Amino acid sequence: MIQALRGMKDILPPESSLWGKLQGLASSVFSSFGYQLVITPIVEKTELFVRSVGEGTDVVSKEMYVFTDRGGESICLRPEGTASIMRAYLNDPEAKSRSLKAWYWGPMFRYERPQKGRYRQFHQFGVEAIGSNSPYIDAELIYMLDVFYKKLGINDVRVELNSIGCELCRPSYKDELVKYLKSNEDKLCNDCKNRINTNPLRVLDCKVENCSKIINGAPIIQDFLCAECNSHNDVVLAALNSCGVKYSKNPLLVRGLDYYSRTVFEFISDKLGGRQNALGGGGRYDDLSAQIGGQKIPSVGYAGGVERTVLFMPELDVKAVTVYVAALDQESLNSLAPIIYECKKLCIDKEVLFIDDDFKARDIKKHLSRADKLGARFALIVGTNELNSSSLVIKDLVEKKESKIDVKYNEVEFTAKLIVGRMLEEKNS
Ligand code: AMP
View 1 (cartoon, helix red, strand yellow):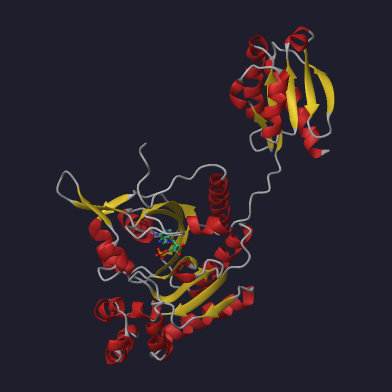
View 2 (tube, rainbow, N blue to C red):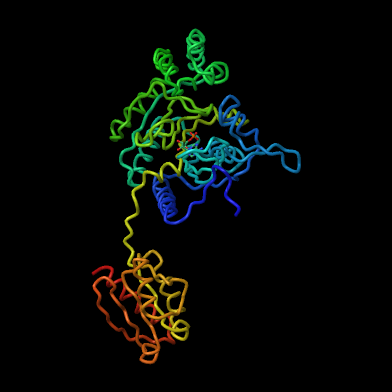
């Protein structure tokens, strides 16, 4: 039997219904805050991520799925969404003249060691506010995400926040940090030794115990922020205080991707534990557009992992009334099936669900045992007697009561409306 690739998984029912809920809520919450859906290709030029995410990052140096296409061009499966959204914005002559608030959703690819909560194909939802340097946009984005997680039923997430300065103030911090790390190099893990030269801020993120001891004594960025970065950060924090978002400052928070500046943040759940405790992360990326060849366009965004978010969502509270369809012979099925199609159409968004169990004609005992297994609330029963008397039996499988309604089998729409009307009455009673 052919298996799915390592680190790539199928999302089947019932889990997929949580994914559906997440996607639906992403659309409604983000669009209420003015973010519009943007869809970009899954495959991009490799250069896009090398220049934006950064050559020194794990994502680009170790984890990208890179191919040469038939035309000899180096292309890759996207490892994240932000660079693509910015590329799309810069490529679109219409969009460029205005700011853009975008949300997206889709698969991302990183060749990592698969483990719980970490896959090679995973999914992210993301929001990007392109074209504003207002700190109120940072705060609103964090507020909106807090609302989003709560609407999903995840109440125990918390926000960690930091400012990593800008291109003016970060270099002097980096110099000090590198000096400090070099003087402690012998106590750091091999990865961190390499990071001193490639991506020193990432050392702050290391969870190896010996490294943590060194990191705790490292200089912190707050002592190096320029006046503009400081006042930007103050406004973000004040706005979050005013709107009641619970956050904690984490001076060691840096992000894995190179393009961030000023505000960086993560939504964390301690239930996940270990290195996989972030549901998602984001921040300001005022320099990204210039890194990929555009003018400087201040922006801020966030990406959340769908697989990790779904782990925390409570099971769905299914409110739909389920109605099992039981035709006792082929002739009854021939008459009933088109009526059931119509019932399903009438019940779109109505929380009444018709379960046809593959439209099998069989005896009542088998039907009732299937209905029971599938957890149906009602059964619609039609056999020769009902066909001949233009009636239909509705059996309440919980209350163990039966009733008959008069129908017209040659009038599909009329009969479907009758059935659906009755089921809606039951639902609301
Ligand atoms: P990043 O794009 O690295 O900032 O990641 C943002 C979020 O995407 C993380 O917090 C995770 O929730 C999720 N994520 C990143 N990499 C993976 C992965 N390999 N498997 C599953 N989720 C991931």
